Amino acid sequence: DTAVNNGELYYYAVTANDAQGTENKASISPNASGAYVDNTTAKILMVTDAEGLNTIVNIESGKLNGAYCLTILPTTSADYSAANTAARTDTKIALTSDMIAQLRYREIVFKNSSGNVVDSPCASGQAISITIQYSAGLATASSGAEDNLRIFRLKSDNSVWENVPSQVTTSSKLVEGSTAKFYVFTVMTYFPPAGTFAISGTITNSANLTPLSGINLTLSGVSNDATITAAN
Image (cartoon, rainbow, N blue to C red; front, side):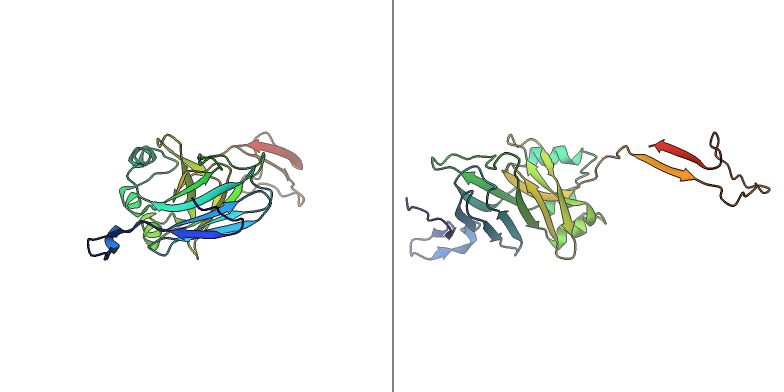
């Protein structure tokens, strides 16, 4: 093993050669990016996959609870079929077969000095910003719901996708969010359930208008100059 120096980035891939030593480019692995990161040095790590889509992890000073080796790896969908099936029946996601074909997956992993994966590397109360670029194909497959694209994180048992608070910029096809837990990430639509909120205001009949034929200027149980509060 080679010691990794603070601040240095490493790029690597695994490929295959035939008996003549010629590289088989069809068997090359996705490029992965690695870096030493800790809680004292800010670091931005970016990986561009074979389609030209970027994944960015922005680690600000003081966000981590220790020192780690961070890797970002574009990965396949082989292990995610159960979570995708669950997402198809989740009304908050409404994942379609067209969208599944356009999903791209990024594995973001922090390992400690012992080589063990740490899924929660952040200091208490802290989170790390991640930005994922999605394809034009996913935008089309979202069927007019591109504004609802959000980042999702795969649960550690690979059973479901969990929504990561995030926001989309459709002009650059980027979704940015913050998370304190890391594993596999993707981008898909999210339709949050309707919330409950209160409305408070004042209804004033300052002109002393009177009802006309067919027009009712009053609310049942509410008098002129009354303050009302309604809940939905």
